Image (cartoon, rainbow, N blue to C red; front, top):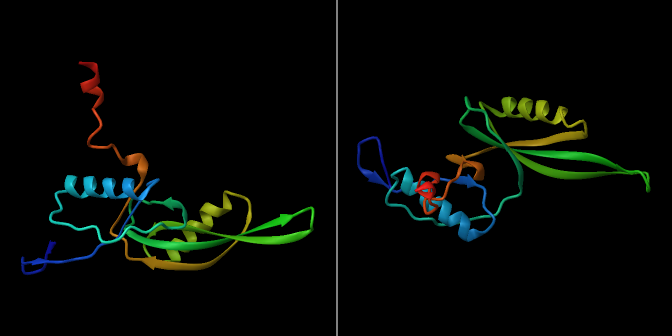
Length: 145
């Protein structure tokens, strides 16, 4: 539930992205994040596994784009080229900015690639696992006592 422009409560569905190893861990993390942010009441309606291989966040951008990257590899034993698709999530100002940021990122990898699509995603926030500390875990200060 979120307040609308007139201040009355309105049901709103938002999409979040977070790292997790299991559906249970994903739900637990999302509940802890929402409670910590003071967002109540809430209901988790769906948890979906995604095929993202990397998330690239830029602090000055809050729009998210799913970028399909086709990597070209050569099977030297057969003498054939093979394409493998990967999906990256990048924060950017617009489609062109997302394309340029992924292009810059991929140029550091030194692998043949093609960017066939850049699609805007209506994502409210991304929560990497490195930024998560379970609420139920004892703090370091508690362990010293």
